[in-house]
Image 1: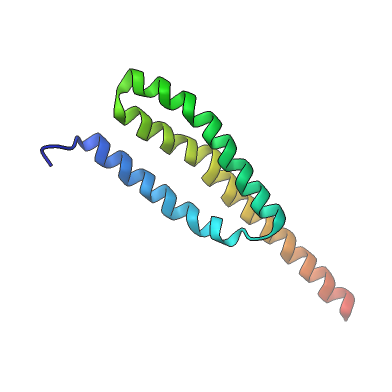
Image 2: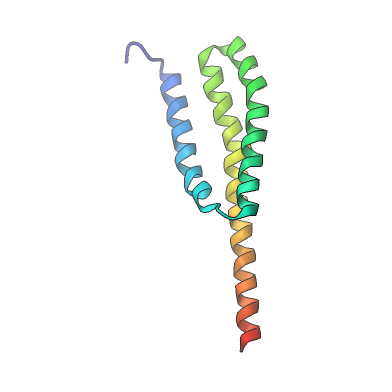
Length: 104
């Protein structure tokens, strides 16, 4: 523990936690629309993260890059993907219920 600052350990721990929350949602996205949405969020996250990381690294050092990646991933990938999954599952459930009612 003498070699690694606590802020770096906490930053990587939070980044790992966000990945663990987001990855199951990403694995579930296997439809054409879902894959396009996933790719779009990844590209947007990268485009936003690079300039923020450069700025944060020059201001805060290495920890700035970790926290900028954490914030970008949370705001641009994790929350939109989870919201997409919730909306998509509600839409699919509504469509399934409509088909069931029409088949009766």
